[in-house]
Image (tube, rainbow, N blue to C red):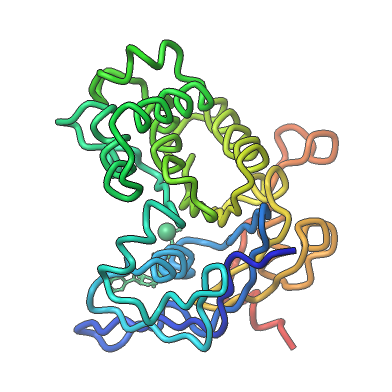
Length: 283
Ligand SMILES: Nc1ncnc2c1ncn2[C@@H]1O[C@H](COP(=O)(O)OP(=O)(O)OP(=O)(O)O)[C@@H](O)[C@H]1O
Ligand SMILES: [Mg+2]
């Protein structure tokens, strides 16, 4: 199977007035073609920093180190910002929690969807527009051909998330990075969007690096899982291995917090993770 993304010993250090923050401390993982890897961990564990530094979107003062960081065998961390710009939006796309960070409120969906493609691929407006309509249909925006000319505020939150996904896929990326893409949505819409991303990844065969703090998302989507805690991967494996036999106390704690129909008594209290005490039990 073709390896799409290789990350070996990735470190991210951020100088601050209080000293250096070691946000990512030697993270390694591989992602194969068509595969979904979930990076899971609590707030502040370094998930976003890992994802952003892969594509050079980390905060400018951060220092990135890596033994190996490649997309389809080509090194990423030695590229200039300009070369990275070429790759972003084409080979690698990223979607965030809040669609309004990706959508410009003052431009029509059409402009936002097609201009990147026209620039990156040198195609004409008509070809780009056809692809935009096709993708909007795929993500479930009805009457895409007309709605293309509307502005972001004319869509609901869930629809904006769908548009952001369609926009991310315009360049036919080999890798989609999704950083908590559904956290801001209500639960039913969340499930629909996750299912949409999952089915698109199969249809269009891109690899997916999915960031979440929710093991429910892991069980719904992931082939592989890396659990992050304080900047390190403390456990990794196939989703099944990790969900069925979590070895690390932190992972066990997180999994115990998912209510399971039939197993968790209605109204019962779910456990609370009391890290870092929990971690002291580690050998
Ligand atoms: N611009 C910054 N300057 C200084 N420290 C930062 C900056 N951005 C992030 N950090 C620190 O880096 C660490 C990792 O942050 P990161 O955003 O990767 O966490 P995360 O796992 O994505 O959390 P969340 O689930 O809340 O999004 C945290 O300790 C955070 O405080
Ligand atoms: Mg984050």
